[in-house]
Every structure is written in structure tokens, then in C-alpha cells.
Image (cartoon, rainbow, N blue to C red):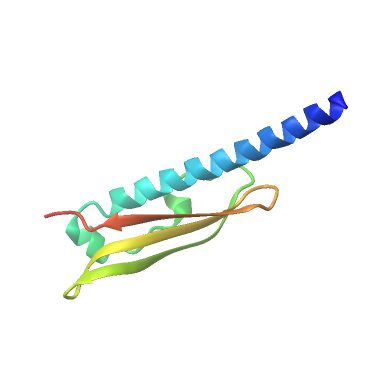
Length: 106
């Protein structure tokens, strides 16, 4: 009985660690995207960067997909975008993270 308790505790800790690593990577990627789009000109002209070039992916993790969607425009200007990233951990669990990026002021 005690052995089962320790095994389930280890599994929960391992899962929690993987979730945290995925969250840290996604947060780091989103901050790097905001930095890449830090001026109105960059926001308008630069494409969504590849996650592999901006943030260090934890060992055994894989980026399955990343995308950007225009959420709101004013006239012909995009002013709000959704950025989404899907990450698979070493055990196969897929996590999806999204954030919104607002066009920077002048």
C-alpha cells in the first residue's frame, strides 16, 4: 500500500514537472514574439517567428503547431492578434497555449 502511494506521488510530480516545462517554454516564446513585434512596423511586416529560433525547447518536447490569427482590425490595420502554440511532452501529452498580442503604440 505504501509503495503504491509513493509511485502515484512520483507520477503526479513527473506530470506536474512536464506541465511546468511546457508552460515555461510557451511563456518564453510569447515574450520573444512580443519582442519581435515591438514596433508598429515590425508588428505589421514581420511574420510569426518559428519557436525553435526564439526559445529553448525542453529535452523530449516537440512543437506540433504554431499559428497567428488576426482578431481585430481598425480600417485595414491589424491591432490585435491571437498567437497559439501546441506542444507535445515526452509522454505524448499535448498542451495548447494561446495569448493575445496588441499592436504597439507609435
